[in-house]
Amino acid sequence: MLFPSYRPRRLRGSKALRKLVRETAVSVDDLIMPLFVRPGKGVKNEIGSMKGNYQMSVDVLVEEALELEGMGVSGVILFGIPDSKDPQATGAYAEDGIVQQAVRAIKEKVGDILVITDVCLCEYTDHGHCGHIVKDKRTGQYDVDNDATLELLKKTALSHAKAGADIVAPSDMMDGRVGAIREVLDKDGFTKLLIMSYAAKYASAFFGPFRDAAESPPKFGDRRTYQMDPPNAREALREVAMDIDEGADIVMVKPALPYLDIIRIIKDEFSYPVAAYSVSGEFAMVKAAAEKGWLDEREIALEMLTSIKRAGADIIITYWAKDAAKWLKE
Ligand code: PBG
Ligand code: ZN
Image 1: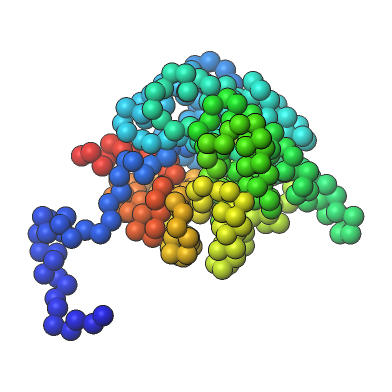
Image 2: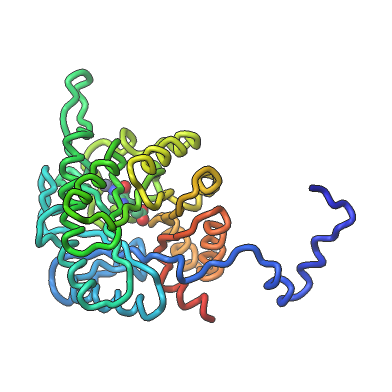
């Protein structure tokens, strides 16, 4: 594959030429916007570490979803901040839970935007972990009980389905959760509902600002016993293979920018749609630098989104979805 007499720079000489031979283009069609919903009316609280993002009540959220739809953004992924939390995460699967209400309202008032729900317990447990917590008899340490958690995740996913979600996205990282959720959905007749699994989700420090936004930091310990260890790449292939085997329709890598290599190997290995979640920390660090005048937010964001697409992502979940929809038109 060596062509020693060829001069690559010939193709870069003009804007028209660059456009002609460009390999990657981010489109608004690829983008999903994360939204945070909380109880109340007329609530729109800006999230300090993620300027331009808000905790919204359902009425405000519907307006936002309408605007995103008008701009051509393909979907939203919803996170709930309930009024009260408990060890069993009852708010996660309550019929009139905050996410369930939000899904119903968007489905009723917004014609054509995909509604994706994050299926996890950490926003609803008083301890802030993604699952049911038990004391390990051997070590005396507290850890999530994988199988007890599956029961709660099944209830949560089913309640989202009943509210009208188009796609459920389990982000808890328990083993066997995709299969468990698929089974309960199919049994209830939701055979066409898609599962987008957070398949390769790393125990990352880049989630910091999200935990402010969703008010969900773990009160003790951390998530390293269930989320992936950042140095591992081959393990991501096993996680993805397992989720596909259990019925995942779309597989996700999270975070995105520090894990572009993972996006690429998954894209090369599996013929499944790959989503990448450009997380809160990726957004916040650029915002902060831009506020100081050290970086150009628009240029950086578009370069990041392009890199994520070039690495192989078909779908990008990003806090820039709304801004990018504007920028890509300019
Ligand atoms: C819930 C969940 C988290 C994120 C998405 N779903 C937090 C976590 O696992 O700690 C992070 C998203 C972001 O940082 O933007 N499990
Ligand atoms: Zn969680």
